Each structure stands twice: as C-alpha cells, then as structure tokens.
Amino acid sequence: MLKWLLIALPVAAFADVGSITELRGNGEVVRQNTTDKLAAELKLSIASYDDVRTGNGRLAISFLDDSILRLTEHSKIVIDDFVFDPDPSKSRLALNMASGTARFLTGALGRINKENIRIKTPTSVISIRGTDFTTTVDEIGRSLVILLPNEDGSASGEITVETAASVVVLNQPFQATMTTVAEAAPTRPVVLTGMTLGFIDNLLIVNPPDEITEAVDEQSGTTSNILDVDLLEETELDESELDDDELEEEIGRLDIDLLAVDFLTDLLEIIEVSAAEKAKVSELDGVKIEGVLAGFDQQNQTYTFVEGEILTFYRSVENTVDLELDKSGAYNISILTAGKAMDITINGGGENAITIVQSP
Image 1: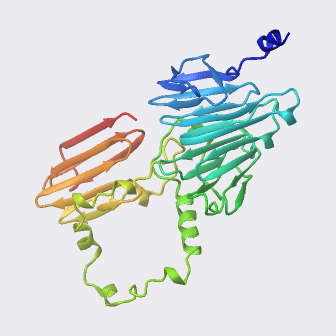
Image 2 (image 1 turned 45 degrees about the horizontal axis):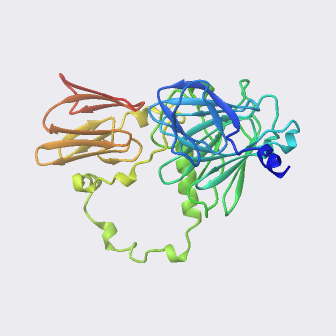
C-alpha cells in the first residue's frame, strides 16, 4: 500500500500562471532550476519563478487573473510568486523587477485583491491599490514609479512605494516618485505635466522627467547636515577670473564619465518643452553650438569639446556617437538614437549635413 501511496503523490511541476499574449522583437524565458532558455513566442506559457527577459523587443504577459504585464526593450523581471484561488483574498502575485521598464495593469475582473499584489525593485517595494502604473529600474537600481490615469483622465487607483526609510502614496494621474537607494526615503510625489496616455509605450527618453530630477535634488538638499559643509567652499577661489566658457574649454576626452549617464529608458517623453530649452546656444573656443550645451550637457548626456582644431561631439548611452569635426566648419547634425532625437547646428549650419540613425 505504501508503494502505491508514493506513486500517487504529486510530482513537482511548473504551474502555468499566464502566457505571452503580445510580442514584438525578441526575448527569452529562463526557467528556474533548469538550463532551459526558451525563446519568447506568442502563447508561450509562463510559470512561477520564470525569469522573463527582453532584448531588442517588447512583450506582454497575461496572467490568470487577467492582469497584464508589458515589458519594453532590455527589461528583466522574475515571477516570484503566483497563487490563484477562487477566493480573491487567498490569491497573490509577487514580481521582482530587476531592470528596464514595465507597465502593469491589474485584472479588470478583480480576481486578486489588489493589496495582495506586490512588485519589488532593488530599491523599493510597490504595493498595488491602483490599476495602471509604470516602473523603470536603471542599471544601479534606481526606480521611477508613475501612476497612470484611466481613459477618462481620473486616477486609476492608488499605489504605495516603500523603502526601509519611508513610504509614499501615489493617487493622482501621472503622479510619480523615485527611489535612489533602499535605505533612503522615496522622493516627494510630484505630478508630471504635459503627459497623455497616447505617449505611453511608444516614446523613449534618456533622462528622468524634470519634476523628478528636481525632487531628487531637493531631497539631497534637505538631507544635508553640518558634516556636509565644506569650509573651503567660501574662499578666494570663488573670485577666480575663469568664466564659464574657459572652464568648458578644459573638458577633454579624458573627462568623459560614462557613469554620469542616466539609463532610465523606455518610459515617457516630456512634452511641451519650452522654446528656450530646445534652443540651447553656447560658444566654445570660437565655435557656435546650438541644440546642446558645450562641455557636458546633463539633459542630453552629451560631451562637446575642442582639442586643437578638432571639435568633438560624444554621447554614449544606449549606443555611442563619436564625431570629430573641423572646428572651423559649419554643420547641420541630426541624430536619432534609440528614440532620442537631437538636432545640432555648428557655426550656423551650412551645406554640410550629417544624419545618424541608430537602433535601440
């Protein structure tokens, strides 16, 4: 009898929790405790503990409770836990977002209590009491979370973003917060202006939204203390005759810092940028530059500097652009790299036109 009982015991298996219902480009699914790397394809079953990754592609997973998870390019997420029960209070879903950008829509039928849905990132835990939001995790774990609205513009619900230090609540359309490290509080929630749902999933940005950048700067300022004061700061060095242009001229190829790049990609695009922001004009060693700032341009993540008679334009984020030009020449430069568009004019432009198009 014991023999038959042992045979009747269930064998551990990978229980399907959903399937891939949308696919563009390539991706793969790495199954736990196996060496299997399954190429992403429509109708491919997704199991608990699957490690889902995208390359140059996007995909969507539909779970048994009708929740939908959409991943953009170069994203990685692990299905940590999924329990589906006829009683919504006993069902749960836990995801671990390692990198990239994901948009999550909770099930329209409410088959899992929203408070039983949690998404972890390297620096935060997101608890769901809303229905539609995005989260982006960069290469060092910083996490940007945005609550999206319903189609009628109203808030889709409420989510909480928690770290070891504090918790914030997002309950307004396009309200966002950012976590930089797990031990620090999230930034104060801010509402991103000029957003529409039509931009979601279609446009790419390199830098986080301006409102988030300001919130991070504000947080850094409010956490300072007396130990942060540099007593050498107020010295005669402040009265140096070096102006901004002279300081910019000192930047060279050895000053390029790839760690300064912000990889918060595939999220939303800030629209309604002021004309002043678009028409950046600066001068460097007699070279007039429009479209990006000379030296290091934080917003565009570009380096522009002069060495001898050579003007160099350098940018390395998703792809690398490295242009060396005669500084006395006039150029119209158009760059489209991984969804980021830049138009740059050198010395007023001219007949020399340079067009660069790079894929993600």
